Image (cartoon, rainbow, N blue to C red; front, side):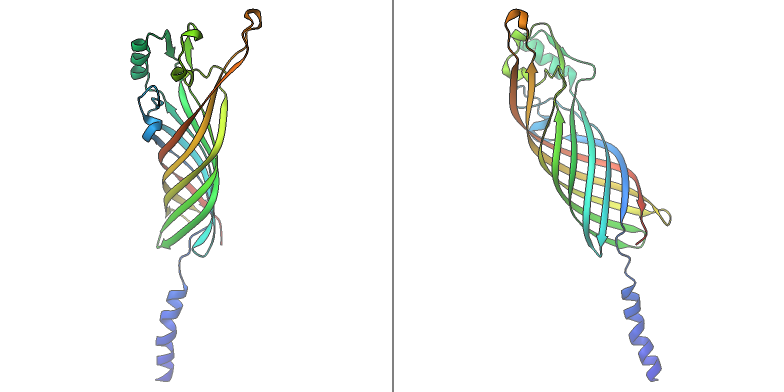
Amino acid sequence: MKKLKFICFILPLSVFAQTNLPSNYIGINHGFSLPIGQYASKNIKTGTYATIGQVTSIDFGRYNNNWGLAGTISIAQHPVDKNTFQNQLNKDGVAAHPNDSSKWLASTVMGGVAYGSAKGKFTFEANFLTGFFFAKTPSMSVENTNTLTEDYWKFYNVLWECVGGIGIQTKAQIRYKLSKHWQLKANAALYNAKIKYKTTQEAVPEFNQPKIIHEYIMPVAVFDFSLGLAYKFAQ
């Protein structure tokens, strides 16, 4: 009878101890990227005319029980709404048009803390990240740069210059176990930053025209949703 009582006491403890902890992993994802707020505005003075685009990212997580470290590297592209932008150009009498490859680029290299919980084949995670945000403005063809007002210079990145800043990101993630090491994963992330963009008017020595740099600040806010695969490392 004493032996039975001992077994009845130990069994629940042993089951509780066999908690399925979050796993260490590295993953790759691809999906859509949605510019929001001012970053998606179709206002020539404050907006970008950016539309929904694509995002590709590589991320990792390393856990000690439910808490851990996480990191991500991502590249997102947001095409310009060319028709709406061209209508604005025509309205303002600017002799220019967006290039076929005209798009905003937004890339991140971020790291931070992660919290995860696993149940059965599912792992649920929340990441809180901060780090570097890299961006590039689009480009357009212009007949005469003297006709450009300050509002239009941010669309004339003829030298394809890239700028950087500091941003933050919050991300939710679900992973589903496919095999011992492989997992299917889905990410939803929101990141934002305030970036000082710049475009440059090249110097023309023969006309005594100096190099002119145009700088302006643009808040960037993007929502990403992507699917991918993760490789789970043995713990």
